Every structure is written in structure tokens, then in C-alpha cells.
Length: 131
Picture 1 (tube, rainbow, N blue to C red):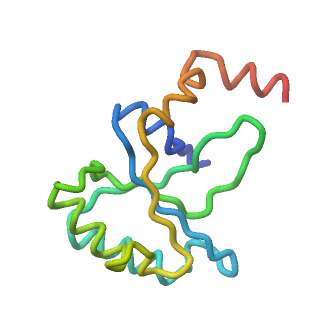
Picture 2 (picture 1 turned 90 degrees about the vertical axis):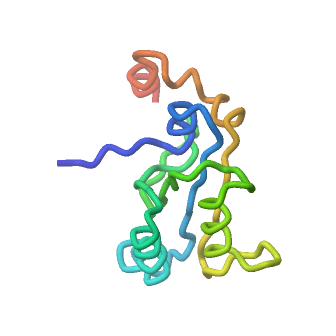
């Protein structure tokens, strides 16, 4: 059975807050065998950091396959201890990524809301009919 994933902007609208997203850019290997991804997700599990597979930011002009992206269920709040722990694990002190081929992204709620029309019942069916 196919896996139906939410896109990161849909998650932002559902949560009504900024959302954190991890993207893996190393296309030399399948995401499922990416050692950095495996190590990061194992750390999330060991530290009680919630996450789930998701698609990237929705774009009506293109479709892309799943590449191992994950939504991280920690609010973007630089004063929050869970966020501080997450940021310290993923980034170096200068803000660069600690993990090669990985991007740590925050999508602000207002950016996610740009696609709110996607939530209208029947939107994607009408979109597919015109594709």
C-alpha cells in the first residue's frame, strides 16, 4: 500500500506554527541507506525528539519524489531547551551544518499559509484534472 505523506507546509498549517524540517541532499545513495540520516534519526529516538516522514514545500508546478525528508516535532523557539538541544546536535557553533548533505530548515507559518488554498476540499482533484 502506498504511503501518503503530508507536505511540510501542510503540517505548518495544521500545527498553526513555524515548523522544522530536515532535508537530505546527498543523492549518491538512497535515503534509506544514508548513514547520516540513520544516525540523526537514531539520536532523535534516543532523545525523545518526535519526527515523521514528510514531503517538501508544496509547489503546484512540479512534483518530486520522497527523498527522506522529515518534519521535526519541536517548536522553533530559541529559548526552548528541546530546541537548543536539537540545534546543538545538528549545527556547529557558527550555524553551519554538522552533518554533510543535510539541511535544517524552519518554515515560518506565514510562508506555510501561502498554500492554504490547497486545503480547500477538491483542490487537488481539480489540479490533477488540469495537469
